[in-house]
Amino acid sequence: MSGKPAKTIPEKGLSPTEWRVMQVCWRLKRTTIRDILFEISDRAPAMSYTTVHMLLTRIVEKGYLLLEQDRGNNYYTPAVERAVIVRAAVEDFVDNTLAQEPANLEILEEVLEDRKAGLPASDKPN
Image (cartoon, rainbow, N blue to C red; front, top):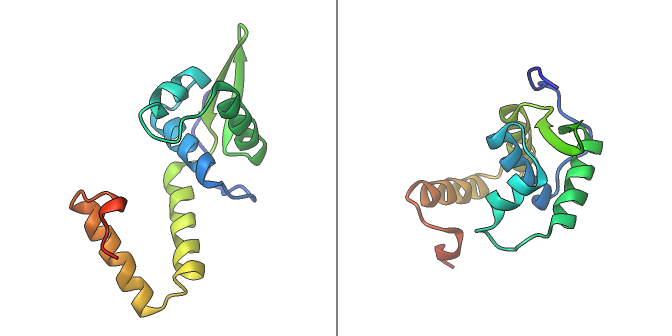
C-alpha cells in the first residue's frame, strides 16, 4: 500500500505502549514486527513478539496503521501523519491535564527545558 498518511485523527486514542510502537512505525515508515522488536529492544520494559503483534492489531483497528500482507509477511505503515496526532495529543494534554493553569504551564516549561538539556526524566528534581 502506498500513499500519504491522512491528516485526520482516529476516534480512539493511543495508550502509552501503543505510542511507543507508533513512534517506531512513524520513524521506519513501513515495518514488520521484527523490525519493531529490534528498535525497542534497548528500552525497558521489554516486549515479546506476541505483545507487539497484539498492540499492532489494536493500532490497526483504531485506524493509526495500515496492514499490508505480502507473501506471508505483515507490513505496517502509518495511516495518519505523526505531526497531526502529536499536536492533538499535546493540545489535549495542555487543555485537560494542565488545565491551562499558569503554574502547571511553568512545570511543563521546566520539563521541556530539562529534556532540551538532555536530562532524563529520572533526574528531575523533587
